Image (tube, rainbow, N blue to C red; front, side):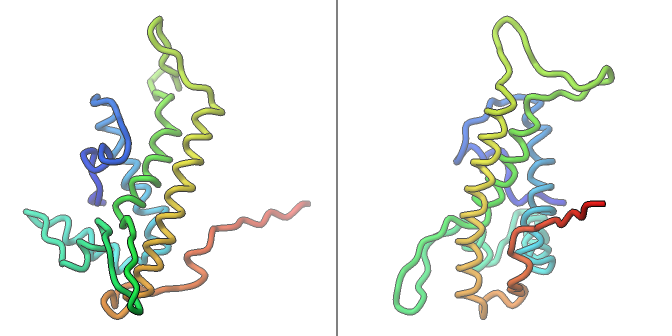
Length: 176
C-alpha cells in the first residue's frame, strides 16, 4: 500500500534518527496504520482515492483531499474551525506502532534488544507509555478528521459515515 506519509512528514512532528533501520521500518508502520487503524473508519473508497492520487507522478491530490490530508481551517455554520488533518492522524497511529517495535531487532538467532556501552534500552513500561500516548493523540486527531468529514460530507461522497465503524473495537471473551 502506498504510504500517505513519509519520513520527512514524520520529522515535522517527532525527532527520529536518520538510519537505515528507521528508514526501513517506518513505511511498514505507516502501511499498517493506514490499513488497520484508518481504513475501518475512513472507508475503503476514500482511502483508495487518496492512495490513487498519491501514486501519480508527481502527486496530484484534489484540493479537497489536500485539505483532508494536511488540515487547515474551514467554515461550518458561520464558525471557523481548525483541524490537523489525516496525515497527522496517520503519523501518530504509525508512530505508536513504530516505537513499540523499535527496541527489538529480529535476527536469525532470535529477537534481540540493542544494548552496548553507549546505549541502554528503554524499559518495556516506558515504551508502552510512549506508544499509548501516541495512540491517544491519534484517536483525538481521528475525531477531528471525522468531525471535518461529517461537516463537509457533501464534498466527500466517498466517505460513508457509519456510527458503528468509528467506535473502538471490543472483543468479548467467554469463559468455559
